[in-house]
Image (cartoon, rainbow, N blue to C red; front, side, top):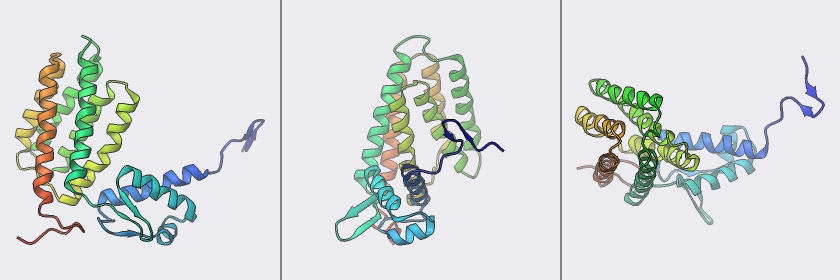
Length: 240
C-alpha cells in the first residue's frame, strides 16, 4: 500500500482544530438530545475522559458552544448547560424568521430563479407532510418539516444564510426535546404552513409566501413560550 506522495503523507493526522470540532459536536449533540440538561455542570476532566481527547480541545469546544448559546461559562464556576428560556427561544426564532425572509425575497424576486428540480423536491416534502401527519409518531413530521425549511433556504445558494439557518436547527431540536412538544393538529399545520407555502413559492407569490412563513414561525414561538412557563430551570416540569 502506498503511504506517501512527494508532497507528504496521504492521510494527515487529526489537528487541534479538528479535535476541538469533534469535541464540540459530541457535546452539542448530547445537549440537543437532552443527555446533558440545563444547569448540568460540564467538567473538563470528565469530558476528556469520555471523549478520549486532551483537555485543551475540550476547553476550546466549551468556548465555541458558549458562543453558540448551548453552554454558559462563569468565572470560578466553570461551564454548565445553558437554560432554555423565553429570550433564547425568541432570539433563535427571530433569526430563523429573518433568514427565511431573506431566502424568499431572493428566490421570488426574479421569475424563474427556482429550478424545476427544487420545486419538485419542495412538492414532495409538502405531500410528505400530509402523509406523516396521519402517523402516530410525530418524529417523521418534525424531520420532514426541518428538511422542507432547509430546502427553501438551500435553494438560494446563499452560503451564509444556509449555514446560519442550519446551525440554528440544533437549537430548535433542543427546544422540542426539552419541552416535550406535542403537535396536536399536524394535518392542519401541514395544510396551512407547508402545502400552502409550497403553492405560494410555486406560483411566485412572494407576499403570500412571506406571510405564511412568518405566521408559521410566530405560532412556533407562542407554542414554546406557553410550555416554558411550566418548566423549571433544570428542565423538570413544574407540578400543576
